[in-house]
Image (tube, helix red, strand yellow):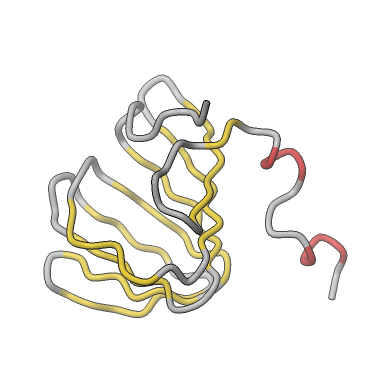
Length: 115
């Protein structure tokens, strides 16, 4: 295993501001844009995140396995897979293993910084 593969995210990512998220086992580091946000998530297998909707979201799986239901269609996503959730579309997620995913949100206020 290469040295960089032993850490979930390099120090430069972990030096970003951490998001305030009320779900134990989910951490994220925020890259804030003027009109968007990018979050580098580190997610334990916390179970299911119930149906919800928000701004448009594009994501790419770095590692792990999750079940994602978008507008009633369920698929398993793994390393290298990408997904898009249009604004306002109902979706839910179930984290089957430890997951590392990068999500891009079209709303600059989707997440706030952890205090």
